[in-house]
Length: 320
Ligand code: GZL
Image (cartoon, helix red, strand yellow):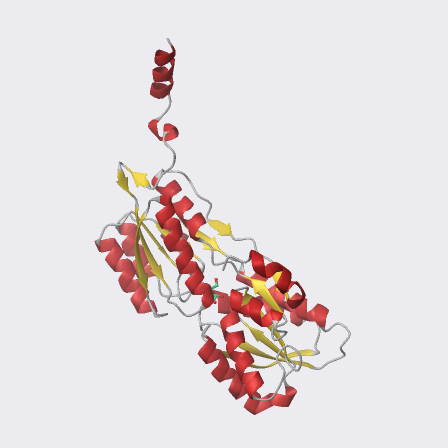
């Protein structure tokens, strides 16, 4: 009697409901093609690690490429995934524009596309299923709010130099926008120099050296769009005989281990968290897409802000 009940139950429910959502579709592993930006920062390294380990855990076959921060390489990789007829394509667009042609090719090939980390600027939002990533404008606002609070007793001027991320990238555009939205409330804040350091330590150091040469004694604050550029700038500030974190207040974004080490050394004042650990969410979305489930158009990662005062306490909890 018991055996029959179980059989009826099995027959009644649709097969999909009976099987755990795995990395398999029609009995073979789901194949995901991922076109990564590059390996330009600690953040990117942690992001790659999260994607690779999550794919393995999910039983999803991952094809992975590193574009060395060049859009043409990402486009080439997406075309190769289309030719290989992967099940899903995911990528972090190095810049916001120039994707429509290749994404139309993916759409015509009936391969769903997922954006992770960075967004694209396109009139046609049917070119991707969903965008999983941070709210970069809010990250910029958090940086601005921290500075307004920090300088509330200071009549000014507060002269700021800015190390921007990769030109044309969503994080660079939006972190600048959010920061300026907040500091424009008080004319004492002035961005006296702003230039891209392309999210790397080396370029961040090089550009900060130029800022110091031009305006050294006038600089009160550095706003860096990521920790790697801030860490490079810290080296330049020390080589110029100034104390980073004291003579020049430093604000950055990401919250990578290197930033926590700089904060614990008193050389960085605050890092706004931007989580690279997008792998688990990406794999869950890939499985949902293959299982025919609907997914939200936008999945925002929840994040915090870490001033140097909490760095030592928070450091042991950090996963990247
Ligand atoms: C943000 C990410 C940025 C990081 C940088 O989501 O795209 O690119 O802030 C990384 O560290 O290089």
